Structures are given as structure tokens and as C-alpha cells.
Length: 518
Image (cartoon, helix red, strand yellow):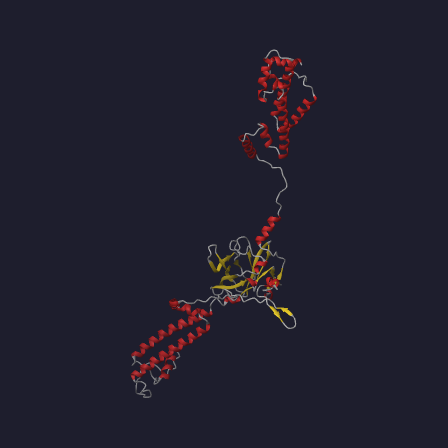
């Protein structure tokens, strides 16, 4: 039972009978609408107090807004009372002058001829007001008060006719009746269009006359509570139906489907098929335009509650091509059919899409621009990184070659430290090699072992300086070559005669002769 209530709501009824146990369909309470399907606003104003006098200040609009039964009653009562009052005034004049006592005396000149009682006075007023003029009753020149009353009667009759007939004409020609031939679909649907979830409904025009400058607007009526705790009953929110793109301007010669795209700016951004069953809202649709035949502005309204929003449906097409014209089948105007539509909201769809996308992209070697490489070189120099010119060259290489060159450089530096840490030259550094060799060459009493150390340092210096001026790739290759040479060749390797432009030219003459002899 609890599962059934969760599925169908609290209004699901459990019925026990003597024969068997049956379940009745869920009974949902009638939804109180803010705007009826016919466009009438379900709002009543009460407790106006002294503000009711404002209605009398605009009497004409008040009479036009009244219902037809009240208009007809006021129309009849106004003419009847005016006729009775004017007939009574004519009878009073005849009574004061004594014409009622000499009604059948042919020699007596009365104010109004042949008026000798109230019915005759009433008939005289009707003949005068309706300009019938049978010729039997008429005003004589002996009655100035009758002439004044006749002028007043003519003016009052014209005012009453203009007021009441004008009200009736305006009420009959109101553009509200034109709205009766503008149709809205009974339900609205939610489905995908162009890959986007949309709320859609249909409008149509039954007449051949066009609606000039037709424009449609939508309002979402929903109660909400602000973060400050204020409760806003029937809060109104605008629904975008193409205001920015001009889609709200309609050329309404055939039924059109109005579309509201559900995006992060839409109030239905978090609406899903499941949450739709628990929501309470109302969508008010307002269609405005100018009636082509009368030039009056017409407005048609309707509304859709949450029960009238069909998830996963689409409207049936109503247009067909005939011989020489297009035909609209209004029998299918309200019909829909089911389509495959995701049951989750746009927000949930975006979250699922972001989670399903790959988190890591395949490794690619980065290609640096000239400005980027210069900035990296300057940053490396400021950071005091080792390597000198080799560091800037390695920054321009891909990451794999940089790792290879850095490993080769570390091996070369390790070999330099091992060679320089021998007892004969432990205190010298790579930068002091030329000066140290000069001091060694100028000092007397050196034995053969010292010579061997000088030759070893010299060969190291000669082989090391050209390497440091090359790229990191050449550095790695030459370091491997030096390693192979020092491990397999003897220390007393004969050195060739230096050629001009080589580092040996900078050595003293004694060392150059020693190298030439060896």
C-alpha cells in the first residue's frame, strides 16, 4: 500500500468490497486556476470600502464591462423611466393649466391639443421622442412652458440615446468576440527539437482575416519563497518564446507551434518528468494583435497547469498540400503522439554529459611559439638554472628529448667530477683549467706522472669546451663518445698538432712543443 501511495500520491484510495479487493484510480483534487481556459481571470476584488466611488467616475467603462444581462436591464429601465418622467411633466402642465377639464371643448385652446389624461400625455411624449408625429396631438402657441419643456425633452433624449446606444454598440463590437476564433491547444508538450528540450503549444486562427502585428507572450505563475523568508504567492516569471530572435512576432495564417527552449535561464531548467508530477504552476499564454477588419486591438488568453503539460509528446501535423492551396485539418489540432524524450532535466543532462566526457586527453608534444620560448628562457635564467646556453636550447626541444638531454648532461657532469677529483688536480674546476695548466707548465721539476696528469687535464679541457657550446643532443652524443674514449683508450694518447682556431692555440709554447713531441 505504501508503494502504491508513493507511485500515485496520497489521494490513492483503497476500497474493500465483499467480493474482492480492488483499487480505484487516483482521485486528484481540482486545480484552482488563475486564468481559465477561455481566458477569464479567476480573481475577485473585495473589501473595497470607499473605493467603490471610483467606478462611478468612469461610468461608461463600468457599463461596458458589465455582463449582458445587466446592460439590457439598465437599457430598458433607463428608457422606461425617462419616458414616464417626461410624460408626467406634460401631464402636470396640462393639469396646472386646467386643460384636463376642457379636453372635449372645441372652443378651448389647450397647451397640447387632445391631451386630457395621463395616457394621452404619455402617447404625446412617445410620438415626439420617436419623431412619429401622427398629427392628432401637437403643441399650440398659447403655451410657452410647453415649448421650453419640448426643448429640454429633445436634449435629454439625445443624451440618453447617445449614452445607451453607444454602450450597446461598443459592447457588441468588443474585440473579445474576435478572440473566440483564436484557438489554443488543450495541452502543452515537452519534447526535443533541434537537440534541445523545449516546451511547446499550438495556436491557430479560424478566420481568413489576419491578425496584424500578432505577438505572443508567456507568464509562469508559481508561488515561491525568497532567501529572506518572504512568501510570494502567484509570483509571475517571464518565459522566453523568442523575444530576442523575433520568433514571438507571428504571421498567423495557419496553426503555429510556439516553442520555449529550456536552458539555464529557463525556470524549467531543473524540471524532469518525475518532478513534474509534484510541481504546481500555471503557464499563462497571451496573444495580442490588431483585428484587420476593425483596427481594434484584440487579446486572447489561456493557461496550462502542470496536469496539462505532457512529457515526451509532440503535436500531429495539420497542414497538407492540396491542388493549388494548403489545407488545415483542425480535427487534429489538439492531437499529440509520444516520442522518445529523456526523462531527466536539462541540468541533469548537462551533469551526465560532463561526467561521461574523457577526463584526460592523449599526450601531445607542445609546440611553443617564439615569444613563449623566449619567455621560458628568461624565466629559466632568472631562476638560476644550471646549464647556461644548453638550458635555452633544451627548452626548445620536446619533452622526450629534454629528458634524454638532461640525463646525458647529468652523466657528463658526473664524469667531470670523477676526473677532476683525482689527487693531482682535485682543487681545480672546469673554469680554472686554462689558468691551472699555465701554472703547471711554468713550474719546474715536474715528473712524468705530473705530465700524465697535465695531458689528462688538457685532453679533458680540449674535449669539454667544444661540447658546452653545442646543443643538448650533441652534448649527449659527445659525452657518450668521451666515456667510450676514456674507458678503452690509454691515458697517454698521442695528441695531434693543433690547427689554427682550435683551443690548443691558447696554450703556452712549452706545452704546445710537448704535445707535438708526443
